[in-house]
Amino acid sequence: MQSTALKTDTVMPRNDDITAEKCLIAIKDGDRDALSELYSIASASVYSYALSVLRSVHDAEDVLHDCFVNIFTSAGAYTPCGKPFAWIITIAKNLCLMKLRERKRFASGTEADEDWDMAFAEESGLAPEDRLMIRRCMTLLSEEENRIVVLHAVAGFKHREIAEMMELPLMTVISKYRRAIAKLRKSLE
Image 1 (cartoon, helix red, strand yellow):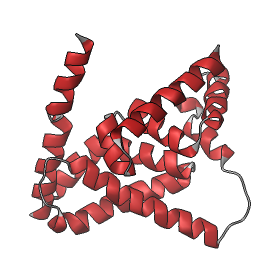
Image 2: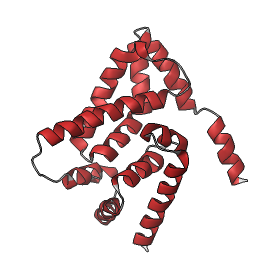
Image 3: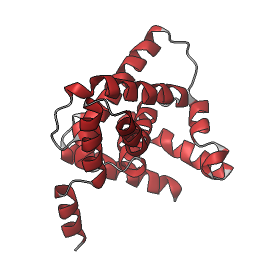
Image 4: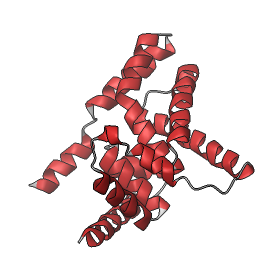
């Protein structure tokens, strides 16, 4: 019964996909309110993706801002195809890659661990012990596993959407996700 629900879920477009597509079309026509609506439904996903890649709150916020500026200026290039989040995350991915290249040029050798602490700051409602546990768990995963877990568990993307974003086969994403969850479970035991 559960597998049937998953199968149906992968065929039906999410309400957010439909709304995002309508917003992008309206942004093409210069509707600034549509940009605000798109921001409200897509900003958490863009931020989560950027944070999982960059591991820096400040850089993730910069990418979030730049992503929506790019969306506004590039909306005319968007071709409606039913996958607006893939297009949006592709913009975020390119901005993240630029940020990483920029970091390499100006490498200072400082760690970004304090950025993870900021991401799970006290406003998040997490107890200090929980923040420590999450931080420890994040270090157990490879960057790719970390990104897949954050995109699926935090940002709510489906495995097939993550596969498209990361340009990986679907089965690879699913197996990496399962292995990462198994690692986290084992660590928590």
